[in-house]
Length: 419
Image (cartoon, rainbow, N blue to C red; front, side, top):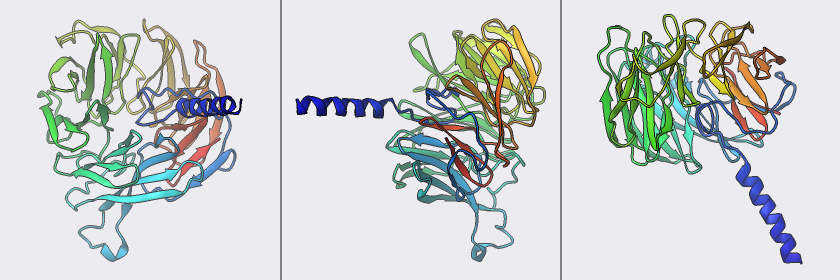
């Protein structure tokens, strides 16, 4: 009887542990902004419903990622005053951090790269020297700083490999997070001097393949896109947006499966995939939403567009699909809702503020986050239904993280866990 009782307890505990959701990459488990949390906070401020606040997370707009009871971030820090010269005054050291999720205390804080003066390029006022979000799988953490370098560490902070020889001229600083497909780490390298994509062996850092972007008429070749991995017709594709083009690559070989051309550069929003469609934004100068069927071959520009929206698409925040609806907020705070399959617009609402962070969905609500720290929470649906507004009172450009039934919010000065 005792043994049966103990077995029941252990099974319950193991089920609880297995069901806990990790948030291992930019925009969560599937990279689409969805959380399986059963409840999430609806009310908070800088002092209300704060579990903890860690004020030693350095400079950076990378989003927090989670595995188990640990949170991982990247950051940049100025050099020690004793090391500063006129030549290196603008350089930064680049770090990976691990934070205990229960206490908010930093468990380890490892310097991964030191910028050289020639790579310490001027960054945009909305960027940072540590903007790409890490990836964690429970054993290893991959961190990326654009042309400044890419590295793999153990979850205890021990270096496995690092590379800083993948060079291109970063316009406005780094941006765009990597993705992992099977045994490769993939990221885009869209600079102002050259544009290409690259796949590395995730365990050794060795180059598996690389492909140059095709020449474009637009002289602005730089972009900051995070790739999207989809599965269609039994095969995987890596979708990577650059200036004027999105290309689908076969992950292991780098073969180009299809591509779609548009007019746009400095592309930031990550595409999403739902209902057999890819939803992408073209960023600058006038962002447009294109919705594409990804089952073609070669140039599908004229044959595979399902619908498009020529106005109020975001330059920076990624779109979000919940059920049959597509939700977007553009950089100036205009939120829209469309039927994801047909493009019919249900509503458009000015929710206030400026936006860089990508929205998420969880526990029956959609969460937006403005650059001034104001979170607008709405119910998804064909009518605009605002549930709450919460003001953190700090600058916030990073996207949300989720841990258990709590939110993680990175501000300019701290990382918050909100209950």
